[in-house]
Length: 575
Image (cartoon, rainbow, N blue to C red; front, side, top):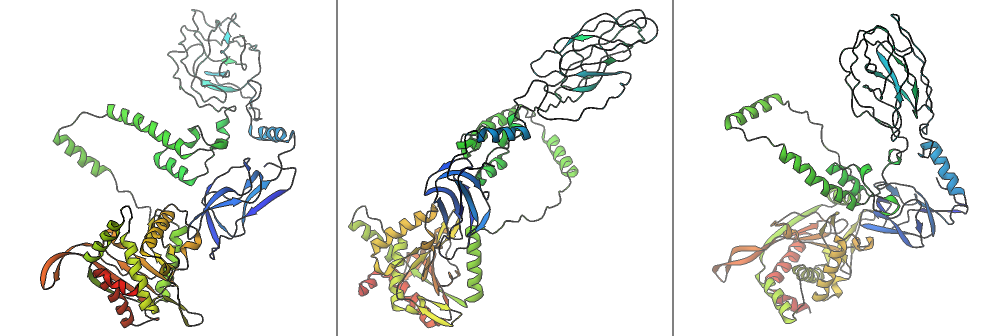
């Protein structure tokens, strides 16, 4: 932990407005050690209504991030600590020394390592066992030369002289170096490293094959080892050996100087972690390209792109030759019989967070509090489509969407039936009837279903409504819509026809009193002036709060909307 010489500034999660009490951290924009300025965006959080970028009101160096990505924080909890001054001279070096002292820096003498492992116990070597020391990587193994330590029929031993610091010793089960001679007990000079099958705690694998010993020797050879060896090896074993020792190649080695072994990869975004997990990418093996050594999404995507062709080639090369139909059937039957069914691990639990939790809470409250009812009607939308074309043709380059025309019709209908532009105060048992029309419309985004609000929709023209709906929809889909634009609606319009469905019984957006749903527009047979013809038909569904009005009022509103869809010229009466 870095210590600053000046005071530290603790920034807590601010009140994001609209009654929001908590937010979930989506992505940190800075890391510990970064320098930030006043009003610089440091974190992106997700509330129950929108994704919000939070700036920091201080300047200085980031000392601590108090929560990881994916953590939900309540308003007022610690978010980030910023130091207003850089560390004192020499303090950074002292801090690095302390970290290296604890974790190991790799800046050590060759052969000594960074840890202080307990001294190994001294045991008498078994007959047929060779104890060797493994030199570090880059240092040649010692070559032992010298005269025999003893002759005669009896076994004789002699100490082994060695030079150099001892790095590590490991028992090797194998045979002594090649020994030849007709006489028993003749000690021979051994040349070359002794190989064996073992796991070496040092810096380099031990691999190889010990040469076979020949001759009826019945003594013990002791070798004087000289040279830049990393340790001393005493060789004690019977010279009568037949065959060669089996050696395990590629022994496991622990490298104390590798920095990647003591530092985990820095990944801030949970999306990057999920992408790496889904594609089986080892984050520790990536070379980060982000600031302060942060692994970014493009690093993972590049690793996936390089891995895919490499993994596909061996699969194509190792593909077996096509078998006959009978062999394939027999193999399939045997596989189906041999493979037991795996027991189910149970359902996957997905926590309700962010927008999904807000939607769940609001819809549950709507169903629990509002005694809603739904009425619907099929309408001929051919006239509405013709009016849309006429408006766009009147001024080339101007676009007027169907949603804007339906919004204009709803605003006119609410002026005729203001009971539906209201809400119920359950605590005071009162109906709140609004003079302004704040029109909400359902929008499907990557974060879930949201309901942006166009305020004072009754004051806008049809062209202005179309432009505002398009702008608000784009902000909602990119997650840049401020939270205050997602609340305060008095009536909601839901065009679920874009999903290819005809009708629905939509749930009212609490605490509003009504919602109009519009299905898809398709060709259907329709009777016009007593004759059957094909027309553009859609279905309108109105869900309303039965506490604010009866079915007559709701039916009157829906019928007015349907008439305007079929004959848009009716709207001219209220202009």
